[in-house]
Image: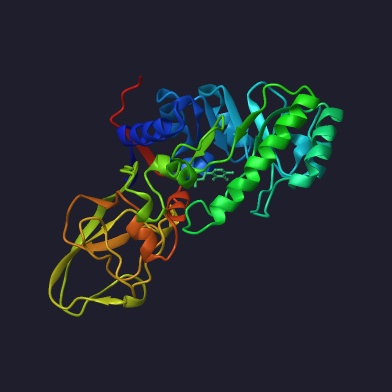
Length: 348
Ligand SMILES: *Cc1c(COP(=O)(O)O)cnc(C)c1O
């Protein structure tokens, strides 16, 4: 049966590396949204906790419920219906604009997002005063302020400019917190790329580590070699083997035709499992270099030879490049129904 292996030591090493960057691993919030970037929420949450992570970041209330037993706090990024937010001592909701402040239920804990240039979510810096006032009036528990960088992995000045805006926001928020007697008030801004770029200019309370914890970065090589280790590998098992005569075709559309007599096998993984579909026209190969023959089916693909088990990839960078996309997309598409096996599993 096709399955995913998760390398616990790689995950620990990536998290510890970021822990060193920020001074203490407890400042690293593990971003486990979207089924832990396809790795498996149920598997990754206890591993993060075993590494000393105290806070997780997830997509929605459902994901928060799954990971809550493992963490002190869980930040929920996406809640389009703030009225239905849950009030308890673990859940924290990202608050994306002034209007949402009116909708979250009394007593709900929030982190207020500030728009420092991405123009997607968050209150504008000029709205901060009003936001703090509304938060007070509506009886919300403001525990944190955060922003998100749109260009932390880009060369150029975008990151610097946005970070300057964030620094001003921070000063303003500290003033407002004093005025409204809000304490403690935590700050966080950095995603993976911004964490990897830390030199000696870090004074936030937390960071949000996503893709780098899983072993990847899109940062330009000029920023350094970060020695991140991919956590996930995808494996497929042999379904069936047959001998082809010269001219026989394989799979839908008969796109691949044997140039000679050959042995082919099918493997139990396809685009229905979230693998990007090979259409038979461009060369896509599995880890050992063998080309996928013809079109990938929903639940299987074919290779030359007859090995029992095949590693499709243990590093998605090349796969992502092949499909002109980013590692995030290849990973998050992986079906939650694939079996996940943690290696080595040391339940400490
Ligand atoms: C997904 C996400 C992150 C993590 O980003 P990476 O680049 O994967 O580290 C951090 N913050 C927010 C708000 C996010 O949505």
